[in-house]
Image (cartoon, rainbow, N blue to C red; front, side, top):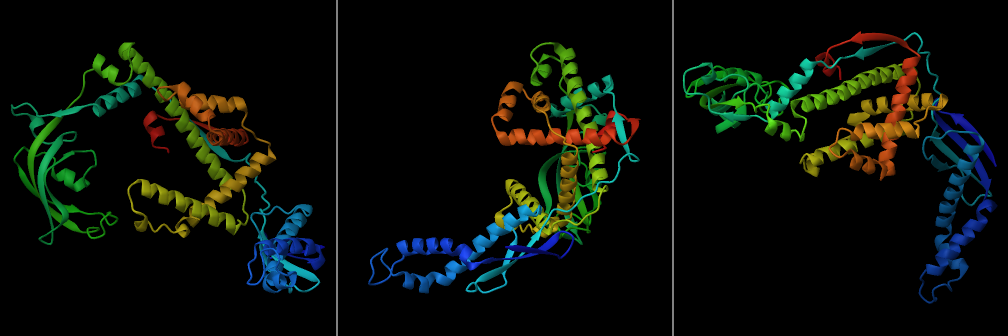
Length: 439
């Protein structure tokens, strides 16, 4: 047995090896006997067909199958002996006839690249700090009130509230025309929307601002070049709008009913503020960690240059395409309407594969692990945001795959901390709003 390895590229390899036909004689005979037991031929009872007839009909096929199976097994043995780190199953090609005494094969395969990580000591990472103030808590309470608001007709006496403004619920009739011709979807009767929430195009909302009930108005609206309807993209339409009704937002009072709607049975408004403060603190911690993680991942991506195994990139692109297809199906798209080509995700796949290989290199080289205590703490942290934390905790521990996902998250955090400790630290205080815009 011999093994000769040739380089095609730094990670694509070709191995040539051979073995004697006698090495597979027993395997070949065993397979032919199995075929003979189930083979049917006129004039012979099952299992009584002469070996010569079985050989004539199936000998070549068995030579092919047994030789390939044996070659694949031998290649893995040789690769293990030579410490070759194979990415995926090799492609085998016979270089000799199966009737010869020595059968020769060529194996084409990819190996994992050698990765040399650059030093991080001269790199900088920004560590953000954010304080959750009483003002942030109050803004959150107002947001919760807005989410639970209702809409009512304004007072009858003349006032500013009788003209449409952001936050009002408008009911309108409208007709849209392009070059004087109505277009599909461009008209509606008694259509309602909240002004200022981006439900309509900005120019349309601007045209509906400052109107009184019964007012009629015509205005132009430019559809953006990337508009979802290609028939309208980049075109200008004239809309005739009639305002039928204005309803103003009515916020709920800060009373027991409002507090109860938040799932808090006792403790009053102070308990509400305490709960909101705790939730915002967790959100701040999560966003800061995410920002640091994003910086570390970019640092890792730029820390080494090497060739990527094509098979891994293709597999990752197919995985992303499959996830995209499933997501679209869940949103109601039909199968035939989802031509998701994996090649569309090649760039993203290249990034993911490169980052994954570097990630594993750093983890293995520095023996980073996720301890059981860290996994437990992460599960408890995630469970706190649910109404029944204990049930969520049991849910995580009931499935090894869920535990594996938590372990991966913890390992990522450990890697981020490891890289962070090896880089220069820049502390930067920012507001809650600024932090929200980072990710």
